[in-house]
Length: 157
Image (cartoon, rainbow, N blue to C red):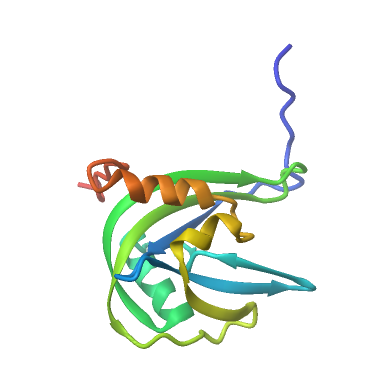
C-alpha cells in the first residue's frame, strides 16, 4: 500500500537552513545555546538562507551575527531535512565546515540566543543538539577532507 501523503494546510516551500561546523585548534566545536519557552538546547551556528544569497554567504553572515566570529568556508559535510509530522514545517539543513579567520567571540542579539561557546568535541555526543546530528558531525570530521558533498556552484548561465 502506498504511503499516504499529507497535504499542508497552505502551500509553502521548505526553509533552507545553513548549519556551520567550526572546530578550533583545541578540538572544540562552536555551538550556540537557544531558549524557546522553558527549553534550552544547543545548535550549530547558522540560519535561514536568504533569497539571492549563496550557501557560503549565508554561513559567513549567520556565524558573524550569532557569534561575532568571521569564518571562511571549507567544504560541505552532509544534508538532512526535518518535516513535522503534521507537515506544518519542512526544513532542509545543509551542513558545512568552516574555519575562524577573525572576529571576537560574543553572543549575538537575537532573543532566542542565550549562550555561545566552544565545547570540547568529545562532549558533543552527550549534548542535546538540534537537529540531533551529534554522531554525524564527529563521523564527518574523522573522515577528513576527501569526503563530503561536491558542490557545483551557481550554474545559471
